[in-house]
Length: 322
Image (cartoon, rainbow, N blue to C red):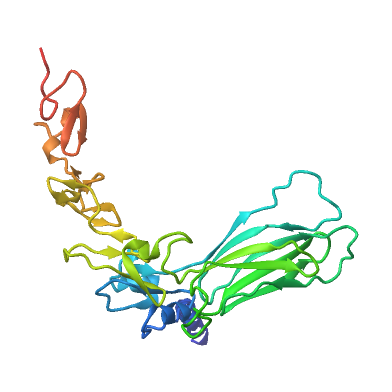
């Protein structure tokens, strides 16, 4: 009996532990009053911007179960992109410092760090010692740390950047709250530097030069509030108000042919309909010949219409010219 009981306990632990661990990793502040509080409550937390959402802050799966559309979810992930490397193709100057990369773009989700390796080739006449990195002033709430990966020439330093939280209105009012912010990293004693362009994903712009909220809304606390259309059924959506439900193909005066819905400029067709404008039926009953074969096996049924092989014709390819 004890062996069986132990076996049952093991099975119970296997069943419960993964879900328990997932719950621990995905604790989201469901009572969050705004996007800022939500996305900082955990790396897996997302915010629903849908106008009629009952659940605002949860994991992506949780929001989907609550009926929030994916286009209405704000779930920044962050990324690192090398913008510029040292393009020198000639022989390296043994007496000059070399840095690689030279320019890096970082998009940060508050509370989630991003890292990249910085390769420093020291001048040959410079002794290999512990190198100190100097940074230009960084925005409030942003931390930059360095750790050596290789302590030989060339040196490899791991650069880690993290925005501990979204800047508040009480922080430096002279700075943009979401970026982009230029920051320069310079080895102490040298003039050459690496440029970082840091942007918070908690932002109302899809890119550094993009208009605020795509020109279709207002930015409130780093969160886009999309404009309201005069026609109630039409609305803007998306993290940057970049989507809408009315800019899709029309057929006979009906959006998506009356057989689908418009999501972010694309028709999502109802079952049994397909095509860019959802006017192509997938039903094949109209293509059945008298012998119940599709186009009498002499053609293809496309959008409910037989495309007959030559020389056959007729509605179901049963006609043959004599």
